[in-house]
Image (cartoon, rainbow, N blue to C red; front, side):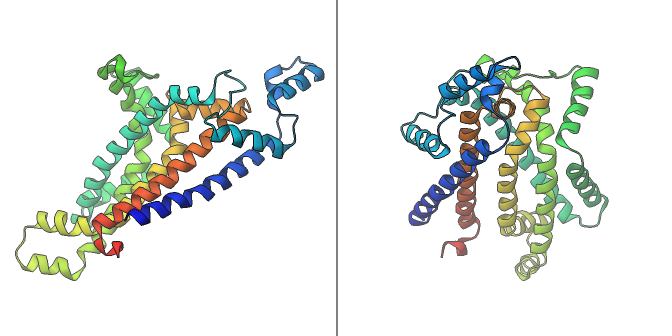
Length: 313
């Protein structure tokens, strides 16, 4: 297992190198000049050129890449063009809202979706099954921002039960912290509940048709034990896979949800950086997301071996 983990971690290095080169070149070859954005509409060409020289954007692309990589290896990811702070400082300030939203969304989605999928599989063809599948279709069809604005209108504006927007750090009080995460987490979790519940249902239904399930029933085991201990456990591999895919998809969902609810997280920072052509922030954020994606895939592969010991050999 240690050899397997070491190999997978080493395999992330070429992936991150490729992502770094690709993103660096893509940002500099696409139209748009950060110096012009910083200088403003009324700036002269000399002022724009002076800003470009100050930021090092007048150097050849490969020289810029070498300078950036050299500093990155030393732990210096550069300074934001727009915010005038180091990228590390900006990410440290914005990481808690994003992590809080992602973790709450993931916990909510798994706790709701897996039981729904198991229930639909156990009652295949019933009204319960049809309702769960109908919700799955609806969850895939409605965009996250539509769900967000609908929840804001109902629970924040009409009923006044929850705050409309914003974020409170957990050290400012758990009550304020959790109440401001409820609506964003529900908004972001709708599509993942639909995805996970659908895959859970299909996987459990397939497992229920296996010979060992019929053997367990023939031994007189209760239906609940057969369903949870035998069927769900053996159906866990595709369920874990889709949960991992859902975590990776959270990256895109967080950007939309943070914009709707005005949450100052990594998603909002990324949107602001893209609009301002803030190269240092965009490069580091994409690299960070790429590393997280690779790490999640590694954790999923490790989890496989616990649910299916045959994978270890």
